[in-house]
Length: 275
Ligand code: NDP
Image (cartoon, rainbow, N blue to C red; front, side, top):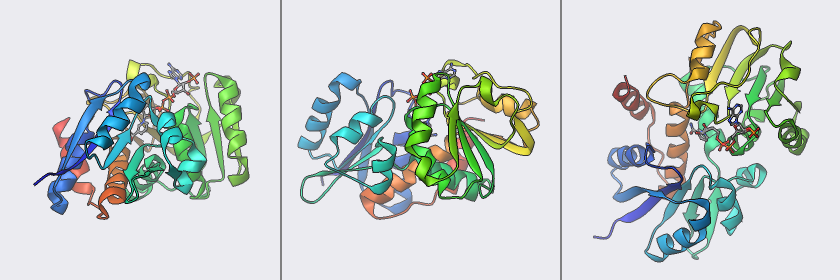
């Protein structure tokens, strides 16, 4: 029997947990498939896609730095991918075309609200960073009716441009880090890639409101600098993005296989493996 084949493309990719997550989903739902991690730099993206699907591949997850290229490459886009201009899931359709979707935002919202019971309605949300991950999470966050979203970024113009793109959805603004130093937020999301190099964006000590929460989209085997910042600033909860990773993967699995895997056992297992 030839198994349906899926992959995650990215660069670098060697530490990806996606193959393990999808293997656990496949076992749990009794689906026969393979899922591999493939190192694909941006310049090889098109040829890698061509060869993967020519060999019978069924779907691809795309991570840094390929999400925008995947958005351009898709033949059709889900509504959420149209908005985000970034695609993390490509699915081969029956007519041979490629559907592009973005499951990152849904994964984040599921982890925040279902797994951690963090309320988003009427909350003041700060997003640090204005890259591909920020693009993917703004619309799903807005759907939860926060009172406001502020995007703060090192390159200020990127934050302003991004906030303008989403301004029809609700109260949203963009700025640099300095301009927000006297404000307070109920939820601070770190969507910069600073944690990947052990860095922390410049954050004022008074930024987090009483009972506020911190969430780093990045994750690692140890707490990230931002998770530690949240803990040392009395965050009610200070979490990393492992749960989001599993939740976005579950949604991708559902798009490909039509079966929604259960996520809590997988998150628990991956958490226990890094303790
Ligand atoms: P991008 O490269 O598109 O954007 C990076 C952002 O980080 C930019 O806004 C950049 O600012 C900012 N930045 C980088 N270094 C620093 C620094 N030292 N100080 C302050 N700001 C910095 O990356 P993505 O948006 O795709 O990814 C961001 C993070 O989200 C990554 O850690 C990634 O792993 C994580 N992620 C996690 C997911 C999950 O499932 N858990 C899913 C998707 C992403 P500037 O514009 O000024 O360069």
